[in-house]
Each structure stands twice: as structure tokens, then as C-alpha cells.
Length: 367
Image 1 (tube, rainbow, N blue to C red):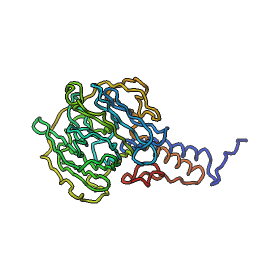
Image 2 (tube, one colour):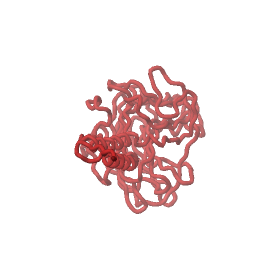
Image 3 (cartoon, helix red, strand yellow):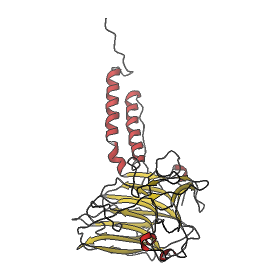
Image 4 (cartoon, rainbow, N blue to C red):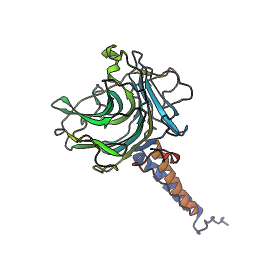
């Protein structure tokens, strides 16, 4: 006599229920990468969180340790020593498409930050070109002298065009909360950039904002001093202190083109929008090998190239890092759906609101 097939509490064969559950789980996992690629966040609080790789030229470091300036929790400390060789220490986040995104992050210049009439780039959007040559970032946030500024680049008639947008005075010893709403331009469509600092719009740009060839712009955040590149000689390093700054609460979210930032629309004495001519074709960027210096006491390394003396390609990226948070959320959702079928319980996963603080729950009270 054949054995009776066991039934679930609802009276359905367990075998069928299991097959449906597995199918849903596989389908959910297959859909994960698309959501993960454009939704990433890093708050530097969990030692188990996989973070981006570093792009370092010379002996700078990106280390995780206590946040300065009265901010609770952890932050990333970035430094570039004035040693005649070092000029860049950045985290690199790739895998974004050429659509619209909101980039949020916090940064902090120490109270003893040295004002120099040379750019220190603290965030840049870089378009790697097909021919592997070198070219300026399409968008770059920098501190120049005592002020913040944004540079936007595009190509016209085979030459790079530049717009410089003032963003107000820098405030050493103060945590800045930045929001960049960016829609990338294409050969036949203008782009848009809206910049907010501490909840107030401080600058904007309408028109071409990239070179329209090669890979979509990827995001780099940290510190980069172009004037310190060794081929430019030692003169611009004389009398300069090492560059040290802090980063926290990085969040990138895909958005609908043209969606307005959740900020006040005008800043007292703020910059007016800049415009560029119609988009036109373009060329190229690059990198070089990097080495890392030993860790400092009380700090942990960020990224993959973290062992003392390790060397890695400047533009190296982690194939699994972009979208870690998104992958975890989407896979969790699939597992929750499977559990709902198996036991009748529903798991509701809430995604992080990209316009709020992207840090962990205990850090939402930050300013």
C-alpha cells in the first residue's frame, strides 16, 4: 500500500508547498542584483559590513575609528601625507547606471585644517573611458582656500569645458551633511545637478555634465590633491600639512529623473544655477599602483587593500561591495516570502529612506 503524502496545516501536500517556496526564493534572488547596484550605504558602524576598496596613490590611508567633533559612533579617517609621493586616498563605488541618483554623505574638516589656494577634492564622479586615458572628473566637490566649490566638466568641440560653482564657506570643526541629486546628461539630453549642504540648497547646474562615452560615472569619496602628483614637482608641497578629513553615512539611491531634493530651496547668499551649452561628444581617465602604510592605534582599515604595505591597482573595485546593503535587503525579502508560504507569517522589510540619515538607527539623532 503506498504511503500517504504528508499534508500541511492547510491541507496541501508538503512537497508542493516546498517546491513553490524554493521557486519563489530563487526568483527573489535572481531579481536582487538590479536593486543592489544602485542602492548602497556605509555607516562604518558594523565590523562585519563589507566596505568599498580603496584607491590610494602613495602611503595615505582610510581607517575606521571614533568620530570626531562630538559625533557619536564610528567614522572613516582619510589622510594623505606630504611625503613627495602620496596624493590620493579614496573609497571607490562602481556599478551605478547613467540615470538619476541621490548621493548623501557627511564630512568633517578638523579645526586645524590648513587653508591652501589649491584644490583638495573630497568627492568626485569619474567616467572611465574606453581608451583608458586620463581626463578630469566630470563632477568634483573640493575645498579651495576657505571655501567649498563644485567643478563640472563636459566636452565641446574636442575640448573640455568647465563650470565652477561656489558652495559657500568651509567650516573646519563642523560636520557637513551633503546631498547631491544628479541626473546624468547624454548626447541628446541635458542633465541636472542640485547640491544641498545641511539641508539648504547651495548650488546647481543645468546642461551637459559628463563626456558621453565610456562607462557611466562612478563615485569616489575621500581626499585627492591633484597638485601633489609627483610629475608636477615639489613646489606645491612646500609648507603644506598632510591632508586629514573624516567621512560618515554614505548613501546612494537611484531616483526618478528631475525629482526635487528634500531641502530648502534657497540658501542665504547661496550660488545661482550654472548652465552649460548643449551636450557634445568626449574622451578619457586613469590610475596607477598604490601602497598602504601601517595602521594607527585604535583604527581599523577600510576596504580590501588593508594589510600593511599592500599594493593594489589605483582603480580597483570590489565586485560584491556595490549594493551589499541592497543585496542583503532583497535576499532577506525573498527568504521572508518563503517563510510566509511555509508558516503563514509575513515578514515586512523596511528599506532605508535615502533622504534621511543613512546611518544606523541609534544614529538618527545626529545633526
